[in-house]
Image 1 (cartoon, rainbow, N blue to C red):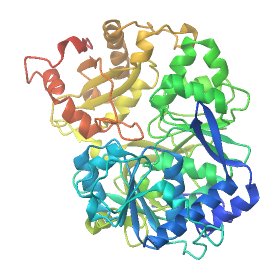
Image 2: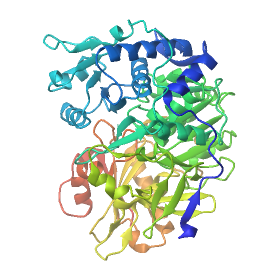
Image 3: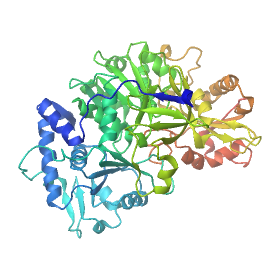
Amino acid sequence: MSDKVRHGAGELPFYHNNLSLMLNHNAEQFSDKPVYQEVRDNKYVPLSWYQLQKKISAIQSSLQDLGFGKGDHLAISSRNREEMLLLELAVMSMGAVYIPIFPGYPAEQTNRLVRFCEPKFVVVSDNNQFQKLESPKDFDRIIHFDEIDNNQNANCVSFKSLLETSPASYDIQGEQVAPDSLSLMMYTSGTMGKPKCVMLTHDNILSQQAAMKSLWSLNSDDRFLSYLPWHHSFGGIYEKYSAIVNGAVLSLEHSFGKNIDLLLENWNKVKPTTFFSVPKIYQEIMTCCMQNQEIEKQFFHKDLRFIFTAAAPLPKNISDTFEKRNIPIYEGWGLTETSPCCTVTDPNVLRKQSIVGKPITGVSLVLSDEDEIMVKGPNVMKGYFNNIEETQKVLKDDGWFYTGDVGEFEETGLRLIARKDRIFKLSNAEKVVPTEIENLMVKDCPFLSHAFVAGAGCDHPVILLFPNKQLLSGKSNLSDIKEGCDSPKGCEEFAKCLGKCVKKMNDSLEAKYAHVKKAMLLDYELSIEKEELTPSMKLAPNAVAKAFEANINYLYGDRDDIIDGDKVYMIDVE
């Protein structure tokens, strides 16, 4: 078993016992420097560390006056905004528990998740989120950021009123809170059936940042442009606290990654020194760079020090673009249950597809007999809230957490193979790893956004392909596209082009039984709102399989007609 164990190098440097100590220390050290900023009247308006400390202290006093205290739960449904950040830091620092919920969920799912986490207070950003609540009277208080239509609920409190209290001291309360105290509960992506709500502590969050100090030198001169949603661990824990702990300024990207033109406009205003993102957004940005040299010049400005990518493999053509400009790329792997980061790549080592690096300081990895990756360290969750059965399945008494990911160790780090539950058997009992095929398809093709492989119990796999619609519809700088690419214009040309790509991909697979026999291109963009993508923009396989069941059945000849025939293109792979 020893050859299947890997430990993070070195020892963790000093870090504060809790968030209150960290925030008070930073407020004293950085005082008038900005900690956060968002756009108002078309310009970024900064919030200083002194202002942050003062506002958090006022919020804590107001919450206590309303009967909210240590150990209480507060659930919130909102997009990223300053009020959300202030409430999060106030609640967590005082020893209470903060629970963010994706604001894009429909009312039924929102209510299910709100009820499950047993909040004393509920926070809504606006009237739209308030109207989703079935029984507002069930909660001690409803705090709202914007005005709401409230004619009958006396328990509603405006966020502005929380700032009107004048506390005896501007110091943020909670310096005596124990490191292992619960601070954050976060729902996992793509939750199916009974919700899984991850319980995280002050130590989980802060130990993670201590481990990263040995890998990079973030400081108060760094600038983040942040679009990643705060209800998800990549943006809500990893990116956000990378900025806050190190005194860097966190600038809200107020298109939330939905409008690349606006993102690039914000980019030009902030000129971030580092950028945390997922491959889908890097792909869209590189598409704009290929189409406009001025955008390319503005994006690759002189102060950009490094980028971080996670959630899915970064296509090689994109990583090559950064590497030829000497901009380091960090890639990481982890789960919400691990706060979230477990491994990070070394930018000085040649990047290889699916290699996600070595364990960070303080974290150990081991492979089970079935090559499932297990994790131990200060970043591992306490368990799932009100879900002992699921907790016992994945978190053992000896501290090892079973991630559900299958992998193997290579010299340069951990290689991810697939989610354990995604590996399927064909009718001949041979095992197929769909993510291996999917990654091979998208890694070199900028015109392709996502691929989905199906085939459980069938004679052979089939594949659904989803295009990069922005690149297909625009003019590209051909010099930045892989040599030999046909540079298709429109889905019809792309479908013909993909036939050669699928054949080439099949030839690269050693196992002939894994060869894709049928393929289909869909003129369709997967979305978070329809739950086809997780909040971190990873493919949600169960949702995609359900949404496109008819298309998959058509590929297997199980139905004669095809859904949305004008948006579907068959690909010749024979």
